[in-house]
Image (cartoon, rainbow, N blue to C red; front, side, top):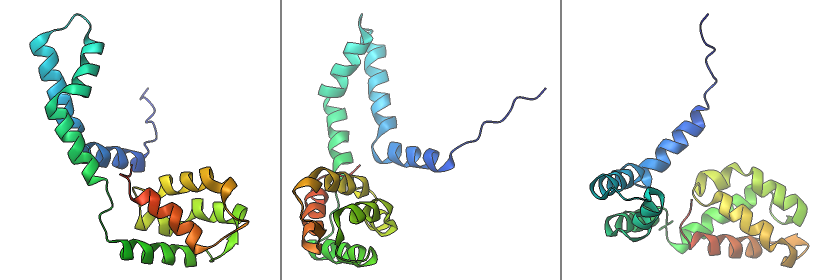
Length: 152
């Protein structure tokens, strides 16, 4: 009897591979393995936590990875893309409808793939303080604040 093949989620596998390559996962693992083999600590878990937090080689990789997640396009380009997304979603809309449109926006995910979830989450967090109808200025202010930070 042959074992059943489990269905594979190719999209998830591709995302994990992309993430690991962009964030130096293999290089970090090599540094951690080197340190643990050389030093052979009594408490390997605490040791590895310390290595990840304090090893200058890993800290340098983290800085490079963080820089790679930044959206370095100029402000005018970001605002133009945000306006395109806003218009594609139908423009001014009530908060509840806008939230659903934002979560389903293919434009947001294609133009800002590393920040799309963060923009949607920021909108949900700030929703209570927003006016009943969402204008472009409201959307752009939230999105630009998110785009100024490293994405996921």
